[in-house]
Image 1 (tube, rainbow, N blue to C red):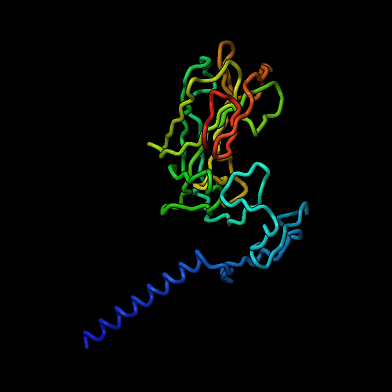
Image 2 (cartoon, helix red, strand yellow):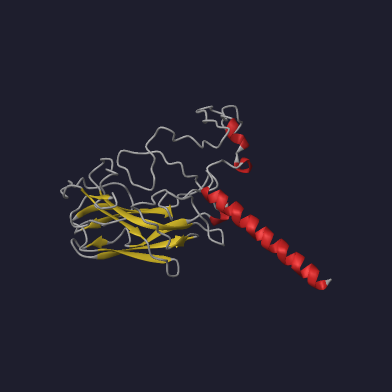
Length: 276
């Protein structure tokens, strides 16, 4: 009798595990939408919702989670496409409000005057995000949904981008003078990036860009929140201190023309041909 019960339990465990494996495999390879993941609120455009008192914009509606939204468009397919594309990958797992990340630049100080053309470090402190998750930017860009670790924190990485300040001109987003993905894991919450050979004299904005592991901007659970990323203004050369204000001395931009890396990332300075 005991032997019979043992065989029955083992058989049920094997059957259950086989069914789970088959279901999990289907969820990763199947081409049909499981009805259990359809969002019922996607059937409403939200225009009459009390939370939208100004009735500014109608949401798109869908009865199938916008599964064919990118039909007929150029699909992103893990690539960085200069001409733009449509990405069918879902946003993924969203952390709780108490697990939203926050990043600070802790070095250099906005009060520092950095010597020109001299290597210096940018130190950041990353709070409530697990850094060190950095997929290939060449063929997995935006390809997979955002993921969380076992503690509910986003698995991702950050970037350092530097732009030259030219009076009150708007920054040229497509052409930073320095850009680098920070792929390493944080040590005591901190991670460092070296700006080899430094920068020419001038006023600069140093910013962070925090991303999930497949390079998409982090997706968070609520709209009312502080900024995830940080930015400081620093002066390279001699003279007045940099400071965090956006005022500048109106220096001209004499850096070299843009170049493109193998991954499609663009940089402006020949001195900094950085890959993502």
